[in-house]
Amino acid sequence: MQLIDKKSQPKPNVRNALMVATCTVLSGSLSSVAAEEEESTLSSIGLSTFYYSEENRVSVNTTHVAIENDLGDETLLRANFVYDTITGASPNGRIIPAQAGDSSIPFTSASGFSVNVNSGGSTGQVWLTEFTDKRAAIDLSLEKLLSRMLTGTVEGSYSSENDFISYGAAGTVAWDLNQRNTTITGGLAVLSESVRPGAGTPKGLAISNCNDTPAALASRPAWANCNITSPRFGNGSKRVIDSVIGVTQVLNERTVTQLNYSYGVSLGYLTDPYKLISVVDYELDGEEVIILYEKRPDERARNSIYWKTISQLSPKKVVDFSYRYFWDDWGIRSHTIDYNYRYDYAPKNYLQPHVRYNLQSDADFFQKAIDASVNSLPEYASADYRLGKLATYSVGIKYGKELGNNGLFAMRATYILQRYRGVDLPDMRALVYQGTFTFKF
Image (tube, rainbow, N blue to C red; front, side, top):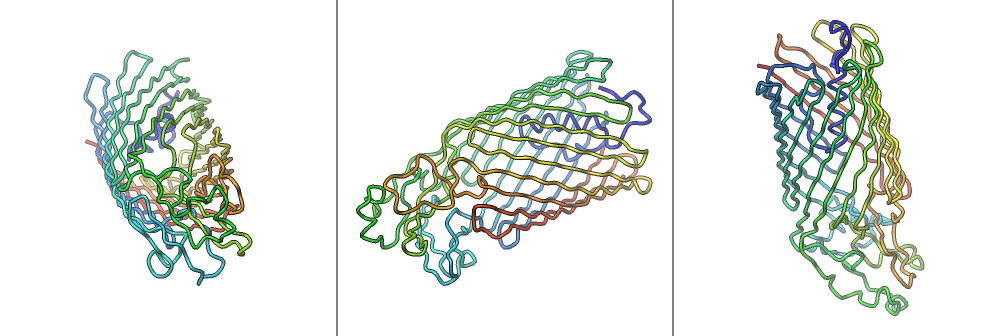
């Protein structure tokens, strides 16, 4: 697909940006560091450093190398290499005690170590669990012009963490129509993932640990085995299949729009082995008396509709707007609005403010805690805030500068605020910094 007048093409190239969006919706793979820049027949190499820091919680440092090589004969080879280090403390699903001095129950984590964060430890807060992780990932793709109007892409990916491994393959086909003003895109991705906690995966809704259980509770069937250690199993494996079909349309020489529909299924072990859920006794002012491991269904079907439009308002101004609606059979619904405004304030220099808003409903089986008075446990239950009601606000700005004819430098900063409903977690605040250098040769 091409715009009618090359001299009036928006910067960044709108067709390229939307095609990258299609592939990202399909496979979730790493996009090129230079993905937002103009299309080029030159090869390129990009280096990106990324820092993400939540207030008193998680920090992430990422190094990303992206290489694109023109092999000739209308063939492009792309490679992405990523290395992450992740440290900090994350909410584990337990309730926050009503008083800072409340006692906590020690529990055995999925790593196999007994953890007690009553005082000191992980900031002295029982609802947080400290962790450290490292991740290495590689993504390779080959794009080939199959005919004058047909382009195919195949992709392979591999990712490894301390306790997690993932590998997959994807393929997309793009068909140009209507004098290259319309592009139909379709694709399929398959992933195989395995989580490998040091002590094995715990049984869902099994007891991690319990306090001195009141005699009235000990007689209830749900808590009869309170002091029996939870059984452990081997690795938790799952398969993920994603598909996408979309259309990209040039509306005029300055505007391009895209509409995608995505469908995916996940099968297998979908529970997070590190997440817990509290059992509380409301006759004891809501005191936590037992800790359980969470349990999620072993199937999930996901749907999303994604719409994106890029328009060049003037030679120096480009707007980029997108909306995504997501729904699944767990009951989660989400709306995401994203807006970018690029202004080339000087030759080879631009600023790009960015705002983003996401609103999410909770899963059908999400609950803050389980009432200790129940006679039987629910089939599924999770207190993971990521499955609960939340609203996320992001605002940021990006600066970019062309370095000669073949170089590009960019940096961005983003502030994120996440608020929760239905849980007692404090708001999450985070800062994101990223610097990118790309060189074409």
